[in-house]
Amino acid sequence: MRVALVQSHPVLGDLDANAAAAQEAIEEATAGGAGLVVFPELALTGYAVGEVDGDLTRRASDPVLLGLAAAAGDAGVLIGFHEDGGRSNYNAAAYYEGGRLVHVHRKLYLPNYGIFDERKHFSPGQTMRAFATRWGGMATLICNDAWQPQLPFLAVQDGAQVLLVPTASAQSLFPQHYDAVEYWRDLTRFYGRMYQSYVVFVNRVGVEGDLHFWGGSHVVDPWGEVVAAAPEEREALVYADLDLDRVRHRR
Image (cartoon, rainbow, N blue to C red; front, side, top):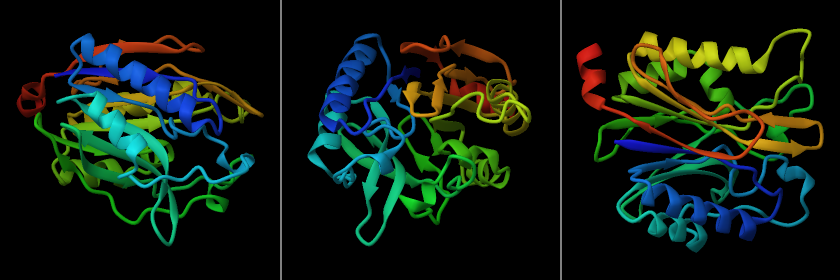
């Protein structure tokens, strides 16, 4: 299975521009042989949704999202968006395959410290489940979800062979305490080794206010080795070939 990592620079609040850019990336990725295309967290809206006037929410069945799924043909697509969940809104990522909705993951652990205030704009999700694809089991961990060790454990126990980690990670927020770039690389490599799984980490780039998103998207194999990586600080489309038989052999 060839996976394409779309390291994008969403325009805050511009759904039309972001959807058009996503469709272009999907078309390029599938032309390059990708069977799975993965976008960052909130790729359809930008991160700081509270700074935008107007409603950015969409249902997973919205024509914009279904149009992106259709553009992928038989390939799978994971894209982050601000979900209209009826009574509540969520920081979500929807997975589509063959043009149809397969699974929606709603971010469970919403950061609400420092300059982060996600709980003002999103409700927390309530479930962590793996989902079936034509290649094997996968699960989604949106950014801060991946920092909660119980979630990847539950995902793997539920059948995930691939952990998809769409992210909007900013660097140098607390430089006196930790290096976000180094910590993320340590974390994804640890999960690859510990859970004998592929880890697909897809971060965005660009600047929104005080948030400087650094990119550095990468794929880790079941031995904890980085097998593909995007550059930092700029948009990129990076491919990696995943062999899920290696997961079974490793386990």
